[in-house]
Length: 459
Image (cartoon, rainbow, N blue to C red; front, top):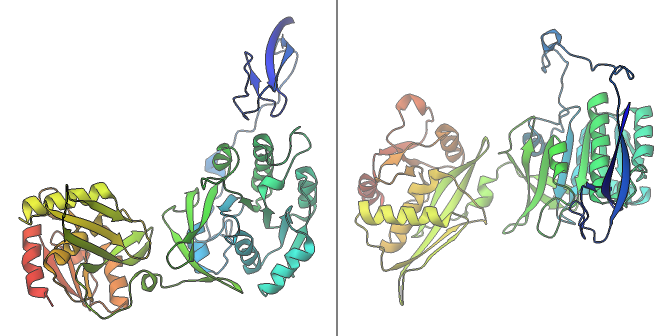
């Protein structure tokens, strides 16, 4: 047995170690917290301590886990908007982090999720008392027969209670209020949040329990706590506010068991969240009047199509260089489309100010909107209109060619549901790839041919 003496500097706030002294801890940012400690490291022969080897699992011998054989059944809320974002339901044994601004409705949402599950649920809150939680349940008309409440902030006591009950769903409101007695720092610190999250991850995986952690956000809109918290959890869900109509949008930024491109749209009422099953009507103006510089197109958010209204205003430049402004669409992409129209369609925009807007406050980056944006610019410049029941889809290349778009059939199906009668699409789409009926399809190859089609469709 040999001995080796080593000197390290340890932070008194977060226990982070550093080989040399500095005035500020690089882990937690505390000033003057590093203190010198002497560690006696022992190099011991492996024969003295017999380490039990870890169990090696043969994956070929494990049964296939799918919903057909009953070994893996997702917990479904039967609220379509929520199940879609989670990936067709909440996966047992998963650790979910739900975050959002203060007062946006995180606690209301998890209360409705707990009520929707026909399984035993433990609601842990370090921010509200049992009577306050009961008042919320009464307001939301939730009958908590299978929902038990735990008013505790110590993670060791919480885990001990959970091991006795073994529920199917655990809700922690919020992770910033939970602390561990093992970590010598206050609740909400970097080390406390990380340690508590790891404890909940262990019980989730070991006992196959779904755990939802509610997390706070900073003033920058980021999740409070260490960035490793997002790496520890299986799913990261954000609850956001849509600025124009004040709807609530649920979106996933990380999901190990589903897509991150899905959206759930809700309306907040006195009785809680109500899902918006037809969001396309929310983001397009319900008017029969044809307006120059306005057209309807379609974007895809995951597997869901959204009809959106695109508006453009083109006016002659009064002084200096022409101005380009965009709200909800990439300004650099707009500059490219303007250059293509000038070069390939012989439309002089060098002395025109152009303002583009995606109605409803949406932010989109779908290239399928290129052709519709070109039309709004032309329409506003020439003061021309087309029928509001005409959908325009297509990506515009630098050579003026019209390229195909993905999931065209889903986009056209959504348009048919809302009464659209005509769709302008790329000519590269073959007939066998578009099976949607009840809508007239006009196929074009390039931007010049597009202008000729628009002349025929002018109102």
